[in-house]
Amino acid sequence: MIESEKSQLLDLAENSTGDARSGARSILSFVYGNEYCDCITPIEGGNKSSYSSYVYSQDDMAHAMGLNINVKPNPSTVYSSIDYTLPIGIEKANLQLINAEGKFIYTESVKGVQGQITLNVSNYPAGAYIINIQAGEYKLSKSFIIH
Image (cartoon, rainbow, N blue to C red):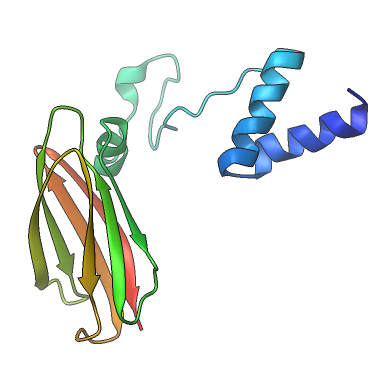
């Protein structure tokens, strides 16, 4: 591999996301022995040699256990789809839409390891919202905009 190709791969590995990042890292690992880790980055911490000194956010822990939500489109004007994946060993969760005043304006119980909810947002006022999902002891929040 010529140097310009390697530098392009390094740029993709460090500055892109998704398949481009993953593919570039795989090639660099296989051909050049580069090592990459998509580990959770400590938010706080003192001594880097001691994992017990790091404090992870609630969202970090939820992601690590497999909890995930994805809202599309975001922002939305009529309908949005909320895809969810629940943590390992949990098959029930509560999903909530919360307005900027902190009021719960939509709540739904979800079941199954993965699923999708279609939410009609056309009757809600335009503004910023939070979508929460609570599965067992894990909770995850995403911002959501309605136009």
